[in-house]
Length: 200
Image 1 (cartoon, one colour):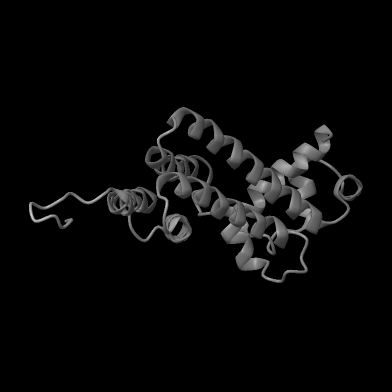
Image 2 (cartoon, rainbow, N blue to C red):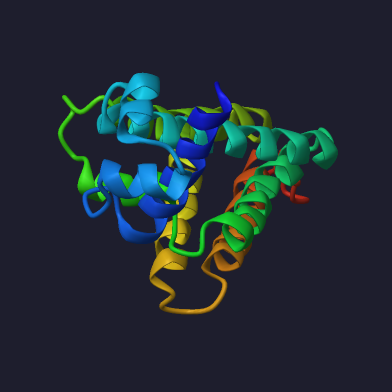
């Protein structure tokens, strides 16, 4: 990506996230980036493509951010799952004061025909897949259900963070995920035997 294109993307990210995608036109993006509209169209072709690149870039940076923290979290399934919530909490505090950029974008781009729709859906499908992989290492039964519940906790926390209705919703979701995981993993353990031979 050329320096001019990178400036366009940086300006678009700030403007789209702060003001909304529909509220920001190419004139403003070009002016903020210090380029002409012709340069913007030469590099991206359309505003829709700028939106695609903006969301794809944020997704890539989030995945890198999360990967580094998961690597540091070690191999314990429980710790790795909770690390996702901790990472989202840290990311939100640094990059997402108004909530999840994908959720916000989806509120404006709900039609599947929009080129950015696949980026938004793909990011959430990737998150569900990540939770599915992590859950399958934590429990041997109902891991899919556990993954979906973790996903709901995670995504609900991101929305609540953007709405700022109560303090630290992602931390609260992490604590609820810990309770859920402990119960699920406890259910996986063989039952203790009573003196009469039955299990407890």
